[in-house]
Structure formats: structure tokens, C-alpha cells
Length: 107
Image (cartoon, rainbow, N blue to C red; front, top):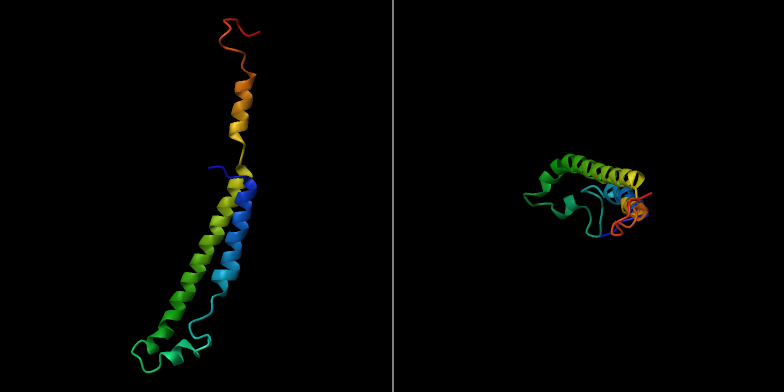
């Protein structure tokens, strides 16, 4: 598998986008939808009154999830910035060696 620094940076940008536009903009539980609000839709059920208790925990969990996406993006950026083409460096060192099979000492 081969990954370039540019690809790592592109994925980091996508992670930020998901955190900001995806996770960060999810509607709250009682946002009106095509069936009305979820609270109104659930009126009369045993679950309906409990929905208000969910929102604070849901909000906290979305902040945590968004933060994790941002941190992963930061790790990908750091990896791209610290990348060195170790295969190319190794190939250069190997190419600099003289022919080991000639029996002659390198000059």
C-alpha cells in the first residue's frame, strides 16, 4: 500500500469537513422535520417525555466525536509533514555501493 503526503493532507481536510459540516451541524432532537418534531410525533408514548433528557448527553457526545475527527486530521497532517521518502533514501545509499561481487576493494 502506498500513501503520499498529499493524500494524507486531503484526508485531513475531509476529516475537518466531517467534524464541522457533518457532526457539528446535526439537528437537535426536536428540530421540525416532515412529520413535525420528534417530541410531537412521540406524544402519548412512554418514550416521548424522556427525549428531553437525551439532548444534553447527545450534544456532549457530538462534541467529543467532532473533536476526535479533528484530532485524527491533525495526526494525518503531522504524518504528512514528517514524511520522508525512506525508500528513495535507501535506494540512493544502495546505489552508492560499489559492485560487491568484483572482488576489488572500493576506492
